[in-house]
Image (cartoon, rainbow, N blue to C red; front, side, top):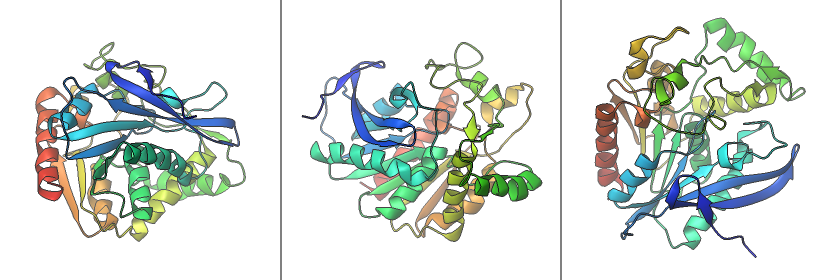
Length: 317
């Protein structure tokens, strides 16, 4: 018998459903589906499934409320080895092929369809954007639209590391998948977000730490193969919105400009590669946005939400 939804840490207007999966090379595996239950409940014209990024999980109450206010039932998926789904014996984010997430998405979609939702938007942020784009390419008739928030389409690394060192490490990942690699991200992005530091958001630092979880060669190889598929072209037949910051910034020492720029990815890579997703791409730069545009300062994310729902009204209705 299928286990019921359980209370979620986000509060009484959210609940969660464990989605057990077949064991992998680390043992037992699960994903976790989160559902928003606004009060009062309102009829909706469709549903959205949101997929988080790297070193991340779903905690954005505001996002759920925004989608509900614009006529969408809201679901979010904590992928295997992230957030709510992370089990004690697992290494965070440890996968060897991005297709491993297909089972998590399949199970989430089965629950959403069983609830009677037939018009579905898939949304993904950063690494979740890469995963969502590849999944949609394999299941193009399952979705009315795809919304990508700063998708991770290329490594943001110096030329030699990106073109030589990373591909070599990724190739070795097939033989030595557990060999650790430094994640290479400074803690300044987390500082810009969490209210304990310089930001406004409250989330579980055990699930989304400032000093990001380490990665291994197997994970890097999986990412590089997924990005290679994007470079070759996904030919997505559905409408795709790609939101991103207007500019990037860098450096390991804190600067105030980090509140209004992408300090994780190079937005030039997003602009260059997004058209390879398919023929129906809308690129939308959001001035002064951070890497996750919906975690930007209030006026900026309000503009991002306005752009998102204008586009959905045009493309989905």
